[in-house]
Image 1 (cartoon, rainbow, N blue to C red):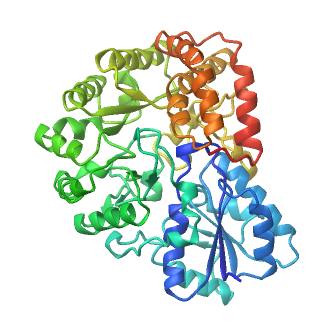
Image 2: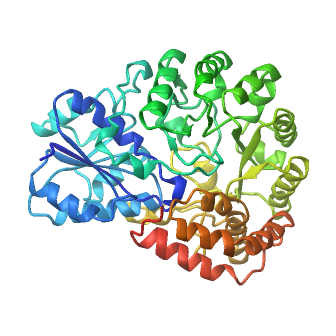
Length: 491
């Protein structure tokens, strides 16, 4: 019997090395366990019998079931999970948390799929919240202060079948046992117009001490016999002094690793000798948020960088033997296709200068509530969903045939942007995902079958041939069936 059941729902990107431990649930479970509660984590991404397990737990009458979700596909699967709980005869309370409930708590409560919404990070408040729910004293919407990173408890990985989260990696090559081991810092102090971090984490960067972070990394690497790891910090390198202490501390591990985000302007200001330290510690890959190749669009989104700074970061990475991986976006209100093509030309110049450079899927801007650009999007015709259920298709890497997410483009233009997103995925992201697969049969088949299509889609992407295409319909259909509609597990 478990006192609390925590559910992590599918994301729509649940394949290979993209499946990481549910760190947010582990961070919630740690203080609960410390207070004497029993906790069960159910992860739809790795558990094909999740529904059976959930019903079994409901029969034991837990205090509540907690569901975490982001805007988009996770919202859809969270609703599916909540419906199952609502249909159970034991009437177990449902608690929603995560990015989407934090931003729109009233709408989540009004949906009838949640009894309580917990906003922001609950590491330091979850025990009191649990006591209040058990005693029927909790408010419907509960806000939480941002916790002190230095006081966070170790994540209780024993609640997981950890081997399901250890993979060959998307970026750390020749590392069969790579895992996302969480965060050493949270938040971001910058004000990018498309990002919800400002609302959820109040534009504050909070970090563990270098000593605590180094110990956490070493402990996890040794505990799970990892050959590589990655950290999901938004801004690991923002403090050069702290980053230097951590990278010096993990030198004896002698392995490869990377972090989720790096700004090109911060990297350009980092002395080469410190970049060399990063590489010696195993940071052979740096992921950059380049976003756009057009300076007007970069200014529009308040990114605080220029195209020229991105190109300089690429050259600097090459000089220092580091593989840069760039994130790109398109489809902003007022953005023209000439400006979109500037971003493609940026990618082409980056690759020509540095053949080792990588690119993630080129996402289509999707406005999120409470972000700096939200009102700007509404001014250009966006009509926000009025019900929780309508957020399930609010995705940034899919076609918008009906014009609900990017109404400032006409149908032909929206089709072209969807094509571009898919072509970039097939030319840039998918080959890395194939490398991270554990299923040897699927991996072998893809390795044999995909090289020619890969070259074709690379040619289309780097030469901006994306407006007319007929071959992507099947890819879109399969993606919808496998990742958006079903509960298939592909490792």
